[in-house]
Image (cartoon, rainbow, N blue to C red; front, side, top):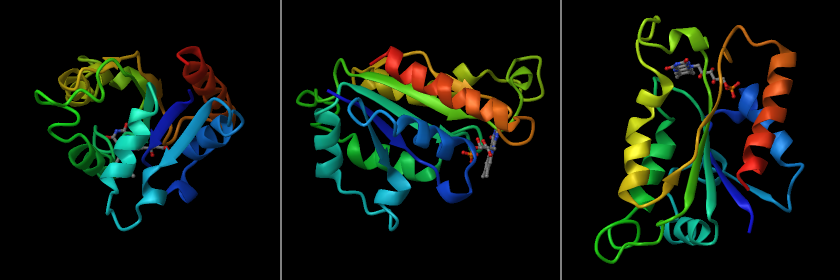
Length: 176
Ligand SMILES: Cc1cc2nc3c(=O)[nH]c(=O)nc-3n(C[C@H](O)[C@H](O)[C@H](O)COP(=O)(O)O)c2cc1C
């Protein structure tokens, strides 16, 4: 069974990090399936049955996105709202996601040192991910440690991005 990457980047053509990550993961077609939400649903009309089937047939699912306003891009939020339905994801008859392993992979524009209580942002990444983690708990999924690449807006050199792609692939394959 492959690892499923649900990725949400509103403008992948202009992306430096997520685009490179997708290229790196594409080298493992036997083990990794990439599902690009903005490419699949340019009109934001999500095929719920298709998405639910996709989730049912994978046990290791990674949500990959650039951090936008300390959260994830809006199509991923709509996807969650539409796909995690009562009677399928939660409720007395909703057990489809129970026991599935959820990972998170984020590219983050700002520096790591700012994502502390004493830093400029004042919150840790773990704290910002609380809504996602609570949602995973709600549907009975198991959260894996997240993967994050900081400084992606300005500080990161091309070599840093290259290294992050290798590290990300290792993260995905480690939890395979
Ligand atoms: C609309 C928007 C909101 C953003 N919000 C944040 C943010 O809240 N925190 C942060 O560190 N970076 C933020 N960034 C920077 C992105 O995280 C960064 O550009 C992205 O991770 C780079 O990945 P990419 O090369 O794949 O686009 C934001 C960028 C945009 C365009």
